[in-house]
Image (tube, rainbow, N blue to C red; front, top):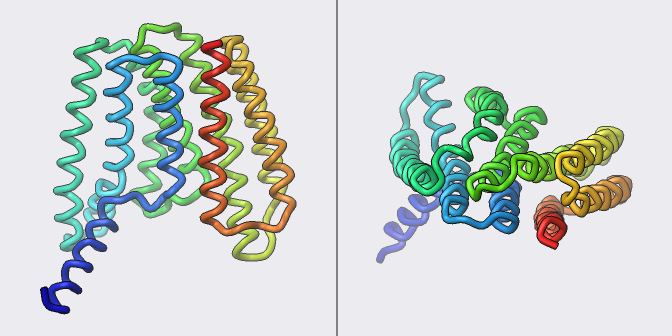
Length: 268
């Protein structure tokens, strides 16, 4: 292969990644957490299908957003066509996973996703206007994807109270984590940031997690986990900020730890 051909292949791959791969690295963890928690506390074949559907929807958002933005701006680029083709494939995978969940568990799992629908609509409305990085759409998207945990629980024919509870634990985690990360990134870039934004978020996250215990007492471990995360983030936000990549890796580790603690509390 000549140097020119190699450069062309590299550019094609880079273009494909830009169209197909989400740029929000934290989104991978926020999608994995509800899928993992739901399956740990209520394993089922329908739950696995819903997990596949959740990741398909997460991946679909990137090319779909590109197509929507280009259509809104009245243009059609090479990337628009590539994004459309990728979106169609991911939509087919998503539809197949949903059909599998319906075949295995009926529509018992749908209610949380219907409730989360307005949150998704808010996020998408910002995405189309290229404003998806603002606080409101990020919070709406994170709380909405957490509803997958509730759907997986219901698909396994477990109680509605447990379904609501696991959703609230993960929503609490998102409510505390996202403002904290935004403040840390702001401090990293500008040297300062509104620390009180993070403090309010931590207090709110604990209150949301407390409602999870009201829904199902087995989620007490989840509440304790959220309290620990809130305290840690309240301390860290007052220390020198670390690199964005380290923040992301730390957040993923904290999210997975919360999932493990919450699942252990429910199962034991």
